[in-house]
Every structure is written in C-alpha cells, then in structure tokens.
Length: 109
Length: 109
DNA sequence: ACCGGTACTTAGTACCACAGAATAGCGGGA
DNA sequence: TCCCGCTATTCTGTGGTACTAAGTACCGGT
Image (cartoon, rainbow over all chains, first blue to last red; front, side, top):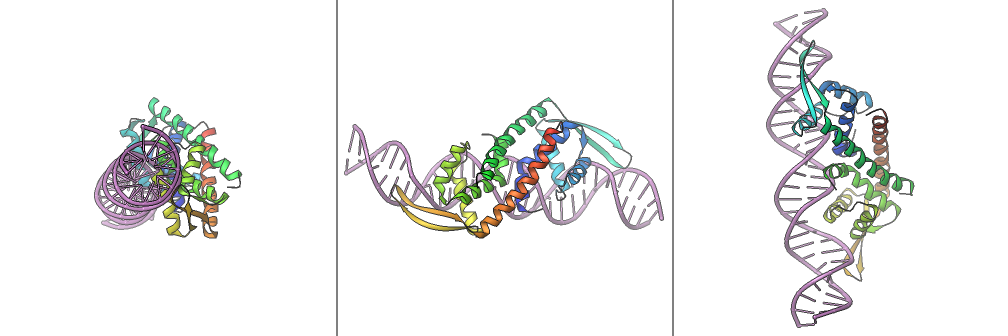
C-alpha cells in the first residue's frame, strides 16, 4: 500500500483484529484472509500472527488448539472479557481521533 | 493519554500537523500549543519538532527563520506543493481506514 | 515423489512517538 | 545582580509496531 498506511496501521490494526474477533472467534490464517477481503491486501501474514501472540501475552484472548483437515493445527482465538474492555477503550480512542481529524478535514485543513 | 493513543498517533500525527500547516504557516511551538488546544494534551514537544525536521528533509515544507520578541528565532514552516499533494494522499489513506473501521464498529464488531 | 495450499513461527530492519535533558533568548521579581 | 519562568528549538536513548524474508509443518492431488 504505502508507507502512510503502514504507519497508520500501527495502533489501528490491533483494533481491527480485536473487532474481527469480537464478532466471532477465528484463527490467524482466517484473519489474514478476511483482512485481504476487506481490502488490506498488503498486510503481511507474519504481522497478524505476531499481533495474536501479543494479545495472548496480554491476556486479551483465550486460545484453543483445533486440528485442521488441511494442515497443521489451528490456534483459534476468542476475545475474553478483558479483551472486550480493551476493544471498547480502542473505540473511544479512535473516536477521539476521528473527531479531531474530521474537523481538520472540513475546516479547510 | 495512553498507549493506544500513542500508537495510533504514529502516522496520523503527521497528517494532523500537515493539515494545520495547510490552513496557514506556523512554527513548532505554535503547533504544539494548537495541538494542546485541540485536546492532544500529552503530545511531547520534542515529537512535533522531530516531525517538522522530517517534513523538511522530505521537501514537504518551506522554512523561514523569523526573529521572535520573546526568545530564540522561530522556524516558520509552510506547506509547499509537494506537501499539499502528500496531505491529499494522507486523506485518501485515512478515508480508506475510517470506512473499514466504521463498518467493523457498526457491524457488531 | 513432488507441488501447491493451509497454518504457524522467527530473526532482523525501519520507523515513529515519548521521556528527559540541554541549549538559547528575553522579561520580571527578590 | 541573580534567578526564575516563559518562549523556542535540539538531541539522545527507549519501547512498540509493521514489514521483509525465510523457515517449519501438514495434507491432498497429480
């Protein structure tokens, strides 16, 4: 995509993936596919996996290993209570930012 | 503010400051004050100055040194043509992201 | 036996915001 | 006079995040 998108994703990709998990549980590969379908064609697979590991370390998700018919076992992540709270905080932060940026965009910025 | 905001500002603060400069020329200290007025109370001064140096190195701004009545000389930055184009690209990237996030937020995410 | 698709892992790189301190000029109060 | 506070900029080091690139592992079809 470009450097701008790369930098903007720092901090927002986290929220995007949390939101995806909030809708329903998912495993890493599935999430990367979903992101590509959403239009994030250039998000590296490794990035998503690293993100999920961080979620696990911070206790935002529960993990369950599920055998797959088509390859190595999947690690299915589901948002727990703490993760849900963190996601809500994300939306608040995001809203704060969008309000300011909308003002700038409209205001001849 | 918090870690979430810090990470989200990576990539967006750049656009925010460019938008401010797009409205009218300004110097570093003035921009930090304006940001605080906007509600970004915790943005470090050093961050803004570093950002402005990057703009200069990338040729997005023109710089003029202006003596101040109240301290050392100011470095007044103004957005040039290249900077304006970069800002427009920023808005496109930002819009792409907000559309996706709005969908996630509404869609039970 | 090989290859392509599925699924996860890891090492190293680049970039950005932050903390904190240093530098510099001016005005006002003790 | 000396120090403090406000204005204004610069610099060093740190942590966190996405990317590149490669590797590991398992399965099915040819």
